Amino acid sequence: MIERRALARHKTFIKGRIYFNNRLSSMDCIVRDITANGGRLECSENVTLPELFELYIPHKDEYFRARIEWRKGNNLGVSWTPEQSERQRPAHEGADPIADRLARIEHDVALLKKRLDALQEM
Image (cartoon, rainbow, N blue to C red; front, side, top):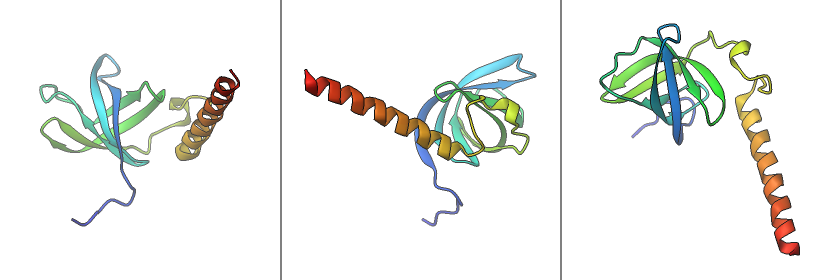
């Protein structure tokens, strides 16, 4: 099978929350794949979503403006819209989400090394 995507997808199993109707309505979803340009969401087939909505990922404390590109059963393919603004990102987030994620991972690794050193001294 030929891969048509420009960016590699990262398989995930992250809880998300979809907000729509001027944030008056919301529903839970699972983020199954994610890239810098979009993702694949798994949610209830019984809810009719608008073409544009806001996706919140609590695990990362990130908001995305999403546009539905395709639907198949309870799966949605979404792309992040260009309306993604700086005010939607947490203050600690920079312009490059991959660099921010790498910095968080490096910080976590440093903390784990400190804990391991402390345990080895016991």
